[in-house]
Length: 329
Image 1 (cartoon, rainbow, N blue to C red):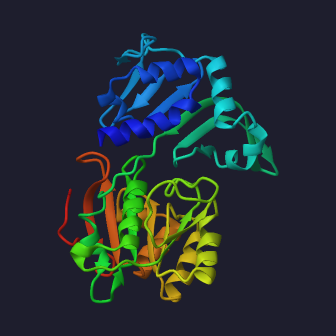
Image 2 (image 1 turned 120 degrees about the vertical axis):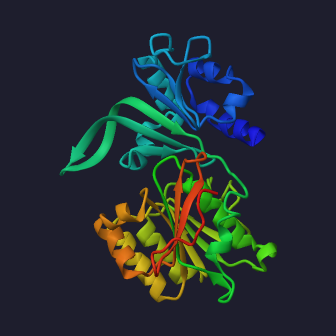
């Protein structure tokens, strides 16, 4: 894990301004392997997020809990950062910036905050960028191994319709990626031969595509539709790629749910994620509450951080809404 973690961090170093790149590079390998986020806020302390805490870096590249001792991000740092993550062509990324983030090679994501430019009440662009949060994407092969026996339908030779439910930074995208990989490749230990999977990767985080080719391992039978809105992407894959399973990250809008119903009616299995900490929280959201009440989903996997990111807090049967007796693995 340490080597893979350091490699993931090294992929985002070229996108950091030189002064900040140098400080992050000075971190011990044991810390580099655990960095989850790097936060730059203009004229504020340089911060990094670790699995158990958020800390600052001082001007010598040392971890400190003191904001007063931390390195202060300058306006020059922010200007250089935007040049690097945009390839010196900020306007070329205007469409991505409407969503408030830029996806970097390898599936890493740079969230952006600043002044919104509106057009007809909708965000057209962002300017005067004052903050950036770089989330580091890491493959964790085997992350889904303990969950898959509850998701695989051995009698039907397929999987159960499954939703991964998780708050931010609790590993749902990592879990989804590994589930897709294993379902696609097959799971000999479970006597599961593998299925064709259609993956809608709207934010280029799951497969980490570069020019349409996945750079992260999502399996040998997986077809990826990169950078496409989920609702439209699910319909495109359903019509054109004959998937046995369709996977997507973070559904929540009504159009996502409408597309989900079309997929289910076509007899294709779904594997999706949703923001939330419990089924009760999902039930309060109009579109997802509809999914929950319809009992169209057969498994809900609740993720948290009780034992670190990716902790399986519970697995719930979607028909009875009762736990299957699996907690905190």
